[in-house]
Image: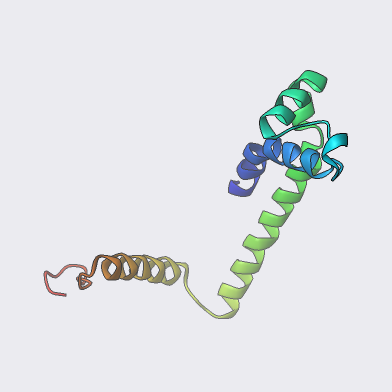
Length: 115
């Protein structure tokens, strides 16, 4: 789901990016002078639809990629016999350790007041 949301949010920016990348290298033959000019020109030429043209294949790719990623992670976790609770608790502990070390404080064990 996060993959699809990121694609939805970033697609208009990608349209501008690819449009600018397709511009000729010679400044005398360029259509746009910059990002804002490109966004205005794209909107003037095609409206909102110009920013979402080709979104369907990108969403399909994101959804498929996310599904494959989740499937591979689950298969590896099952193959290594790592319970889901261990994965999240190890991640939580690592996050706490990183935060504590960044602050220069010792890590306190859960349920105790001692480091």
